[in-house]
Image (tube, rainbow, N blue to C red; front, top):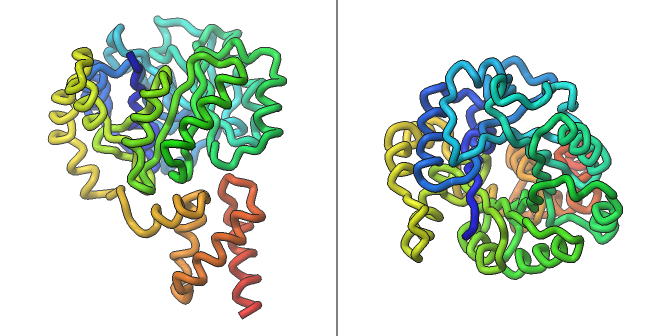
Length: 331
């Protein structure tokens, strides 16, 4: 039976600056546990966050301990980005001092050395470690070789690959799943984005191929096109005989909190995420291009091709400005 990770607060926080209320987070966690989710990613921990960001961009232990009521059937995880948080930001694991049991380390291919070092240090502190390889659609063979050469990869409880730019098709999920199996990983997991309206189809392919876990979020909440809706996948799994899963708790919390979230900070299918998925490029690049009022769709497509050809996969405002400036000067 596939496991589910609820990433609503962590991924959805990109929309509202992680300014969720305690009541919303506790209700969302309870819903996830009662709906059958195995893991609940409660936010990020960032070394030096923007002061405008909410508490769930920091996920400090004392803050979480002040309100969260844990359920044994749903473990609490936090995400850190390689290069944005050090192992020193975590105390040795103690269930009496933190509700966090799992740390999921997100890494772009150019940051993997940092990610591997973080994994080793945090594992030594007693945490269960997940690794989330981002922008998998932009990985090259040397990136997979680098993973293979990491001597301590056996410390990972599970590995994810993320369709960060929403560019994958179901057949791609099969290909990348095999890549990670060939590297010796047994617990392979998938994080989808819905740019091409394929988050559900891609996740079903992951389940068909025997993946260990898939990500979803309440009402699909997430930056840009959003993610696989948690209420959809739990409803599907229940309907196909997996009685552990039940969408009703998610539907209740959607009515209570997430319809209002959607009104304030909408997410979902649109021309911006569509182009990001078709061009297989970071969504922020597309947003920056659409902010240029004098750019036609043809200009945006041409510039996105230039950005993809020369970028470092993760977003850079300086790089974007330079490409736009060079393009305008050439016209």
